[in-house]
Length: 264
Length: 179
Image (cartoon, rainbow over the protein chains, first blue to last red):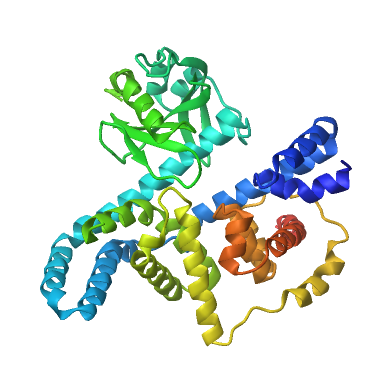
């Protein structure tokens, strides 16, 4: 492949949109062409910058007032549409509307919390993908000891975290421990190999709480994310294993992680 | 599925995407009231047709497609079609002789400002691909255009964006010198 052809394909390469054979051709060219590698890095950087600029822009964010009433408004509109369909159902619709009115505040807070947790899960999945799989972070990871001194003392506890025991598909092996930053959020990151897959344990300080047992969070892509709270931290287990295996891995690691974060 | 369990499934699958959906709507509409209206209408329609959504597939892409279709219908109703891309391509062809690398030290505002400088048809595909992380196939279906058109708009749009970023960087440097 010539540079011109490769550069026409680089955007699709960055977005994982090429066929396997074409991807291999591009990779082979990149191995020997520093100019195209530099071009690729520029495109990756632009994509990452655009994502983070868009995600951070205050002017584009939904207002709390809009989010606060969203659940209730959706429920009410749905209920009223059902009412039009059949007057016989109107009593049920009225009851639902009353329930909505009473529980509106609860759902409003719930929507905000879910939206925030989903954003954090995306962050964790992005870190797993860009740090553990592609080695493509804009800031170099630092040792956990250094991160503990500079940012979060509890990160030191992960220098001795053992691999989880009693997993159904054999033992897990620890490949790497460090602290890294993805889209402005700092994580303690322990990378495992389990059942032939890469699994990330990502820990970050946050006031948000999700419960002490692992819960699967929705993601858009092929990755699965299980999360639980420990102390004032959120813990994420991210992998491309089936959801059930990701959840089991998280359950196996809850205890040692929670013990280490109990006071932090 | 009962009404309540259907609502629960919708809550879990769709509502986490509200933030990104709103940001896209706000960018496209440039008006908070219009964006709120569009997002609420999108979610209402999504809730009504949630039985058609396949669990485990890309819910954000599904919601984005609904939003784009609603927006296209509204624009047609208001006779506000986008400017023909072919005209834009011709107009900008001369500016693409040299595509500079992305300048460093640009702020988020510089970046989003440069994105605003390029034609809306290109902004749209760049945002759907890079920010909403939709596949080419999903973008094609969402905008009702062939995949080849998605690819060419992305390629051209990114080149235009880099040109705009170059201009922004030059202008920012001049301002710094003047200060």
